[in-house]
Image (cartoon, rainbow, N blue to C red; front, side, top):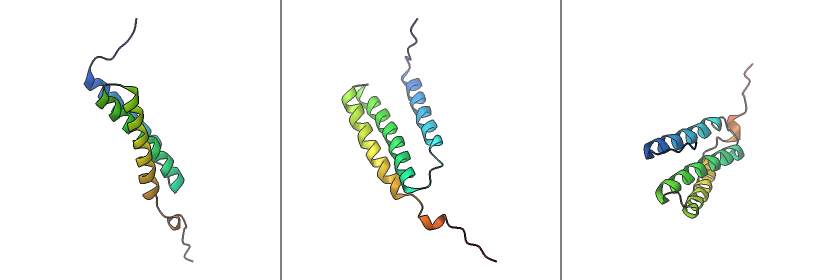
Length: 93
């Protein structure tokens, strides 16, 4: 017996759940490199999901949208990382 998902809204809900799970697991990133990698992963998943929904599941547009999303997510993630001086603790005695 093969299980298939028939409802488009159910597919959208599953894709959104997977995206939120990825975002939650990567939310503790603080250095610019970690933020760039996390942003790239989240952007790639989001782009691939949007590309799959927009193209009806064709591989070419899905991969292209995933690559564009990953590049954009990495750029935004690295640009929004806190500056290293936030990590230093000031000691007042």
